[in-house]
Image 1 (spheres, rainbow, N blue to C red):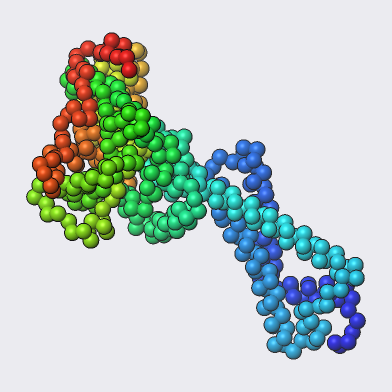
Image 2: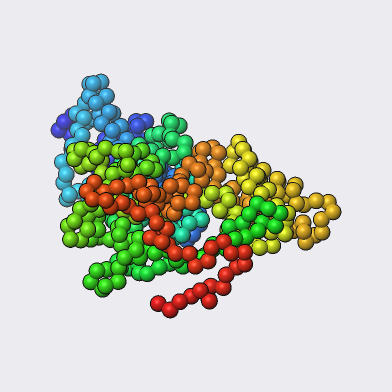
Length: 487
């Protein structure tokens, strides 16, 4: 039997014989179907036909896995089939798994050509799918909507932020392969917690694995390019019948600059300019209270500050725990800010002054916003209905009814972007370190309680260190043109 002449028919018969098993058939079906679906999804997405993130996730994350699984199952099934034939006492005809490759045989050349072409096509498909999968994992849709319940608060806040056109990965990962790999490994841990439904509610902050801001934020916001003061105008409204306004205007000494130009100073220059380095140690996990700080200036001078009543940390503890200050130590909610309800309503009233004609508008809106609701959707509807019930009465004019509807929608929008009961997330769970109105913020250090270990120097808490009021709580809206001064 072993001396029988080899023919193309026998070669094909042998291959079909080995492939005649469930594993190989299933593998061929999986690979073929997933390849066709991948090509179809890629084509449809190219012409703009796919906008659903779940469809894209299925196409570029799930289908490639089925594609590879099918490719593995095909030879696996043939190997098992050969072993089975061997154990059953099959003849040499059936066992000759490695035929001589004689490329003078036209039929063999045709088979080899088909195999090479299909292998190349499979490689292209797998490579394209892998690329599109990685690309998809770096989209805002993947970050914000794939785990919708978990990321709903963060994604909503992001969409209403100044960075809404900046992709999540530009801040959370940045350039370079090492941080990309690190983020994906950390993502596996997050996926596991999500699958097991044992993730934190709310999401714990600050993130310990976040890349230093000097490598991300400062790609656009480098401190040497900050100069002078920033004019800030805002209004605060009372909870009385007419929601009485109080207008303020101040200059914030944001500063920055560079020593070689002679233009430097202010908040950014002192805190994050490259020639000044501040390290600090917090007394709590959320960095709400600072117990030790160190300032190293351009000339190498080092000044150490310790909070009153706190012992100086040991050098080993400092080296292990001290954090180099960067942008997010103050700008800790740059894209995921949940505004306190009172301030959010101040913004609404500043944009829609006609809402003040609704009696006790701010008071009633605050009452509706602070009421407990079981779910986010119930809260949005509850806030809207509460305002409508308060102001849209049967005797109201059509104009008044329309005004009440607009006001109810505006207040419901405040709840929609700042309170998420399912994730136990609102403005109080994620404090902002900018300023010092609602949270300690700047006063974590600038409260007059941080004393130098040598000498009598103190981290100052004087108001005019960081800002100067031009108008404070005026009853009339100030004329900014008259306040403007030449540089």
